Image 1 (cartoon, rainbow, N blue to C red):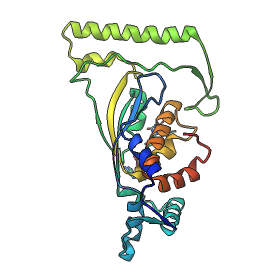
Image 2: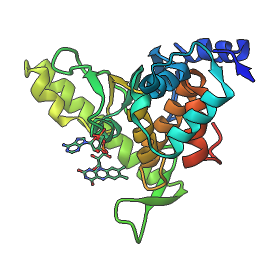
Image 3: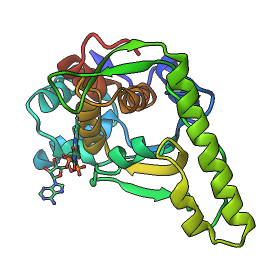
Length: 243
Ligand SMILES: Cc1cc2nc3c(=O)[nH]c(=O)nc-3n(C[C@H](O)[C@H](O)[C@H](O)COP(=O)(O)OP(=O)(O)OC[C@H]3O[C@@H](n4cnc5c(N)ncnc54)[C@H](O)[C@@H]3O)c2cc1C
């Protein structure tokens, strides 16, 4: 059976996923957008088959099986001949976790150049500290008093930041008063191998909930562009995940 490069439904999904802005944290501030993609599943198969001097222009059932085999057996290098660029708006604490992933390229807005936009992440609900895993959380609860403390503290920081600027303190020093829930923006560029590594670590229940939401968004936006590779990856790592 011959599988054409892109079915019309798949083409539609691919076009839709470029420029589509997700709001991973659901607060009308966070955002994740796929701005550019190069490559396709065909390039994955061609990279694997170059050892035999072969090139294909459409995927056969054999190529699909080959890609699934590569993914299932961690033959990772054929997944590196492509590129994704995402534009991300996330709290600084999420961004710090994100940028630990070194096999990627980053450029971030500079709050030395521009005043900090007054946008901050406030969780919808609080989570309990996990009693066993010291870096994890679990469950959720409401607490208006805690919300007020959180938001009042942000407000105090904002007022202090603005006061310093009004008194001719430079932006690069004044920003030191702002909390790590302040939103920042960056471009994240990586290949499919690096992306799947990021998703594997950050979709894991041990990862912080907020970065898990971004990892789900990455998978949702990338999947239409590499459906064979990413369905195989999803099947292996998170078959029950609803996107
Ligand atoms: C749940 C969770 C909790 C975490 N907690 C902490 C924490 O408390 N403190 C903390 O500092 N970090 C923490 N991290 C970050 C973690 O240690 C990694 O830095 C991060 O996940 C990036 O993974 P990576 O190095 O595999 O990815 P990348 O940096 O993208 O690297 C990809 C791969 O390239 C190779 N590689 C990259 N750089 C090197 C190198 N210098 N030498 C050899 N091989 C290299 C490795 O095989 C690596 O897996 C946490 C991560 C997770 C997912």
